Image (cartoon, rainbow, N blue to C red; front, side):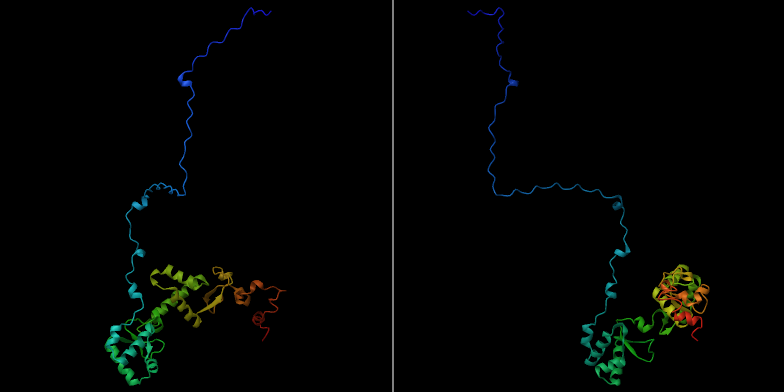
Length: 300
């Protein structure tokens, strides 16, 4: 027979209902999305970038740049075109002569060439030329190369340097004073530098006399005449001695007839362009150099 324990286990307290705040929320049914269609979604619009603040320099008043101004002389620099209205008023022969002379442009045309191309007599050519000159359509210019020739040119053109001789000619005659002054300036630069290129001479003249206004082409013309007159000589730089300021192998100018740079410049080796390849045992050597033997007077 079972007996009840002396100390029975106490019963748990009864369960109390949970407060509303602790109760689990009821489950919601899943949300159903509408079925996808093949219609493409519109692209998403990106926000516009923020406006940039103007720089302090852009707030300054704009100064007009001369190089940005529209060139108004463009029509003047363009090649003139022959006028159809003028041609319509000219007789047949005058029209042919005028068209031929106009086509020669700034070089003009010798009347003998006009006669040969149109097969006209000298009397007819002279009469037509006088008529065109009287109408102001053609002018007679002087050619510094051929003073006895009559060169006719349309009044729409200006004679080229080939006809007038360029800056060194005035009214068809050589301006000897301007040429002499330029020659003196070039010679002074060569004496100062010892040996110099045309660009070095030009830069020196502009530095000493900014108002001279010589272009590099004018300086080259003067240097050519000085070489022909044997005032200067055109040589190739060795990069040493008096040529130290000129890159090796560059053509330059120096005074002619004077000893330049000591004894080394008097022998052929001083100006030889192959001196870097010359050696006693090489293909190029003093033993095989014809110029060196002539300088030593061994071939006479």
